[in-house]
Image (cartoon, rainbow, N blue to C red; front, side, top):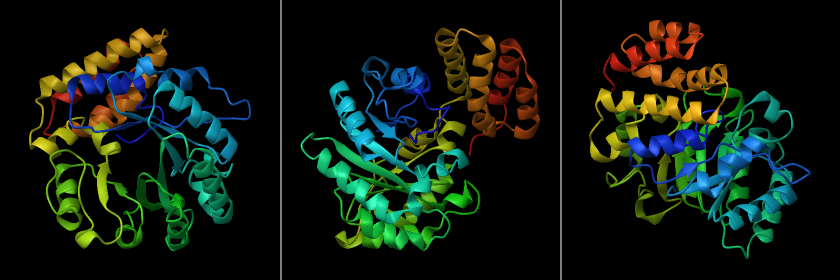
Length: 328
């Protein structure tokens, strides 16, 4: 499960895992270690071990300061985590303007020094350090130099979203650059981007994977050349259809009653976590923005969901949306 800020926090992860299977690993939305090397309350809650019990969770960090990354990674190890992840993919303008996320990709020499510091600084910890990256900030050709840099370090998994920052989530993924990574990466690869339906996955698998996986992890890279594709990361497609991973793995999609029970459980979980009902409504709308894609007339249902002011009104609209249409 991809890290999605505002969506895939610990409440969502735990509720999801109760109803749906076939996710091998969950990534937290990024935490931003700062000069005080402390966590915001929201960030701390998301990474507390008791809030992730029984789940295989990797903690994602957003920073361009190696010292901050190292100190925070060591805290994550003390919490019991086995993997930390560097966010080089976030395309948000406020993040990019600070030289973080995909904005860091504009400074390859600085990025190289950063990676050298964190891999050396954490070498004796036993932590896996993975990287989630776009292929560049402005132009796809930036990826050639970036991959040369990544190949210098023991990245546990290089998660590639083959868009540049300025693409945001528009335009098609630049699969020719993912092809280049498959051929030339010295580190294991994970593909991320626009796998929103079972047909999307089957199209990807038919081109890149030798065998249909028993779980969402995959074996690729013909003849052992280049980077092995170890997994696919599901983001927007999985939030739109929480049964997608199970559909990929088992060929089965849960019935509508399961989706409705999942939504109802989310409502209860957020009400227990968030005191103010208006904030619960806001949080659920962030998720329903994606889940409404399951409905027969998503535009009409989203209009009703967007206009809902109360939790009761929202729940009525959401349940009708979830009950309509057919998931593909």
